[in-house]
Image 1: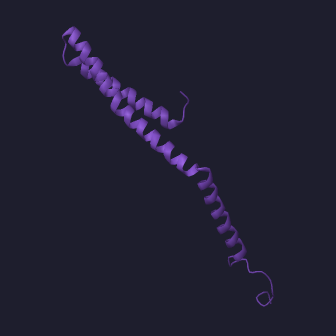
Image 2: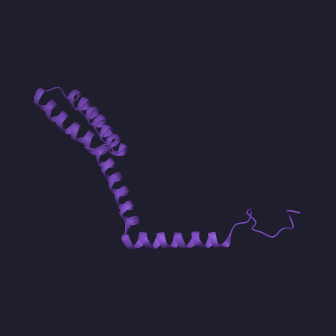
Image 3: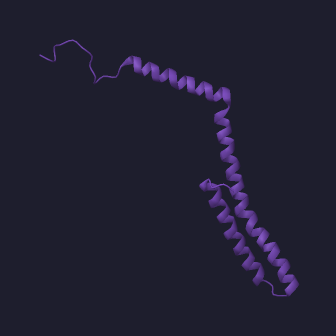
Length: 105
């Protein structure tokens, strides 16, 4: 019957394919180390995270400073400062969203 016939069993994993997969993985790791691609990707991610944090902190602080100066000039403390701080926060969120969506500047 079919069970007794010699031939390849497709249900078991072929040792040659497993060996080939292992060698390909090792070659890819060596190429990443040689080219520095893995480190460059990590550095790019850290750079984007730092830029996003700076945008979320710097934009509201910058808005508050400009608002404080306008309040000092017009004598309307603290309303313009608060409004500019919220505008700065919105600008920071928009910049982080644009940065994360990959949209060109």
